[in-house]
Image (cartoon, rainbow, N blue to C red; front, side, top):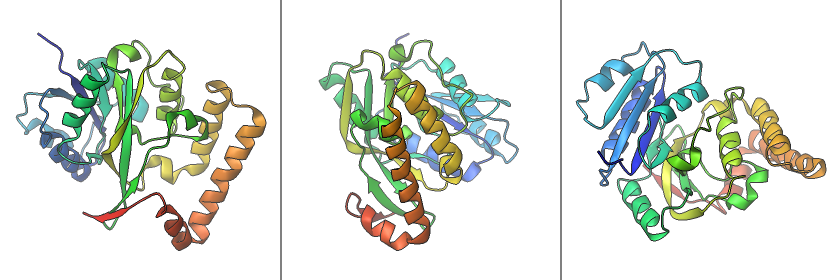
Length: 262
């Protein structure tokens, strides 16, 4: 039996409404050559029952306590059979129904690169989306350059590597930066890949996230201390501006983003 082109990996815990949004997005894809790995952390809100009632042959459902986000994502990698993996976790969604089709076209055109990444929409609690263009992967010393759900990893390129579960916030940043230290063929996609709903773990624990980013910049990227300090100061300034002058912050973001209504 041939491998599917994609494995879409979804992890979740007690987020039934978010899971429904993700499910609708995954099943709307016009590209059908994918399997769907669903890792439930032992939900008690009806999530598992919802998944079991889907009657979707591409769905591989697993449920049980797993120790958190990154252990769950590792479970997903273990089960993934696709040539490329993308994490579309509970509450996330594809930007539109053509994302996997356009990713396929890029993979074929670029002769099966190791890593692809694109833009993302960030959606606030009122449903307004803002386009956040990806930065170049060459700027990864400054932080995560694209949304994690906008990244496609070639499964054979990942190999036996897994998310470092000692991280609580920045494990996706560490994982991506570690992989990019290997010889790599990279494609920057020119379209939005995902919709990310604001207010997740990384945004709610900024201080810990910055500390873990510092760890990645030190141990994986080998960024010199003066540059790390400058990057940290920039992040602190941005965070301060967002808190004390949110309207000014939003106006500055408009220079690189475009609002659209859902």
